[in-house]
Length: 310
Image (cartoon, rainbow, N blue to C red; front, side, top):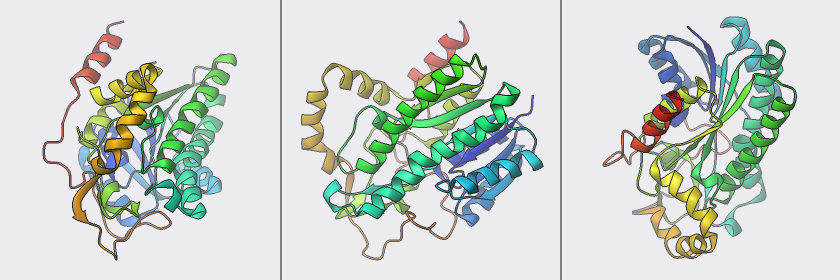
C-alpha cells in the first residue's frame, strides 16, 4: 500500500538514502532540507526509484517553516503516514572552542528540528489515530565522545524527548507510534560540509557503514511496532559497554577519541560549511570514506527477522 512519507535532512546522506528507499516502494515522499540543489537531485532519485517526490525547502530549526511544510505535504500528497526526523548540523571541535551561537545553531537543527517535526506530525496523526514518527538516533545518544559535544548532547536529548512523548501517547491509548533507529558511524557527506575547527579533516570512527544500511532500518521500523532498533554491532557494543563500564569508555575515548576522528589531511582554510547556510551544490548520499565501508549489518538483519517472526 502506497504511503505518504516526510523525510527531513533529505538532500544528502542518510535522509537522502531513506527518501530513495521509500520511493523504491512507490511511496509519495516529501523531502525537507535547506539546500535546493541537493533537494532537486534527491527528488529525481526518488522518482527514478519509482516514487513520487515533493521537494520542500525548509529550515527545520524554524517551527513555523516545519508546520508550513507539513501543510503542503498533506495538501499535495495526502495524509502523512510516516515522518522521519533525520536533519542534523554539528561542529567538530573541542567544547571550549565552540562559540555559543554555533552550539545553539547545532542544537536548534539537530534537537529542536526533531521536536518541531514530531509536533507537526502528531498534530495530524493523533486526530486520525494512525501514523509513525521515526527518530534517527545514534550510538552517541548513549555515549558522548570528544569533539562532538553539540551532536552528542542533541542525540541524548532526542532519546529522552522521544521516551516522554511515547509514554504520553500510550497514556492516551493512541495507536500512533514513536520509534527510534540508532546508527553507527556512516559514510555521509557531513564530514565534508560540517563545520570543523580541527587541524585535520574529520572522519567517522571505523567501522564505517554506508548510509543505505541506515535507510533500510528506518523503512523497516516504520512498518513494525518496534520501540527502537540498533544498527550495526558497534552501536550495540557502545550501548552495552557504556551501561556496564562507563568509566572505561571515558578512559578509552580520552586516549583515542581525538586521533580516531581525524585523517592525516590538513583542513583547508577556506573550507565552507553548512552550519548556518547550505553549502551550494549537490552533495549526494555517500561521502569520501567508502573504501571498506560495510553495505549490510548482519546483527540488524537478524534482529529484524526475529522480530518479524514474533
